[in-house]
Image (tube, rainbow, N blue to C red; front, side, top):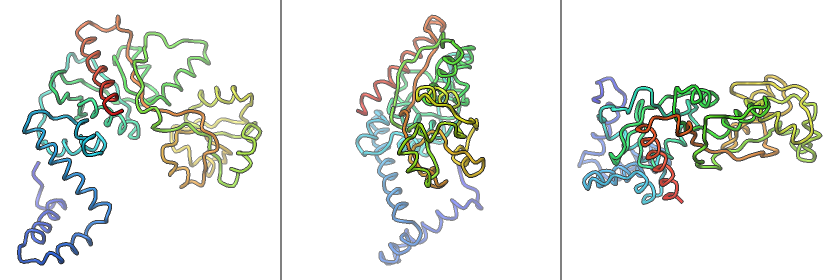
Length: 326
């Protein structure tokens, strides 16, 4: 898509061409210009993306584009290769979904969606708009729906979507809720797990309370005010520990702020790097589980044969992509 004259990207490109493309400008001046314009990390990222672009161009010339192969060759994530590939293409094949009612559900939550894009790339799939494209052209495009992770299995049981990639933190919460109500999750099968250690479910407390919590976590948590987005997971874990919370604060997000804003003494939440905990003056004192991405689908008999074949091919490729990665 062409840039408008006022587009900052277009203006930056013109400046770069003037300075870097001028044969009269000394090399030392060009180097100083780039060092002043970009940080070392940004310069490194630009070089990596350029290498990825070159590999993609070579692959396209031989008609053997494989995101996972380029990812492994260059030692970069499949998600990065897919992003560069997206930037290189302005047009995509027309959408030809098997049927409007056939959909794969993906989470709206950006953290899980980024991991899923990487998983898709390793299966040589590309998430584009409202569909997933098969770069090998063996499977027709798969229509998607972006839904809240908490709602995916509900939509699946109602037949709105036929299969889903969702964070195991969300599915574990749904399963814990079903268990608390004495019910089983019927009509839905777990077909596979991916990146099982992508993030952790942890109890965290204020930094000044960490020593006391480390010494005896059960005594520290018993009768305390605990904030979480996973009330049923919390209830199940407290039951396992044989203790009770004084009060459970159920939040939809920004749980890390609860000790400061709502006077919670502890939280139970998903932790990836720990940066958000540190920013809010919290530390993880107990990891109760590791979480990743799970693939769920309706029972096979509940899906018409043509769609079942499409789904089977798609799921097989995802599993093969993970085996290739390992």
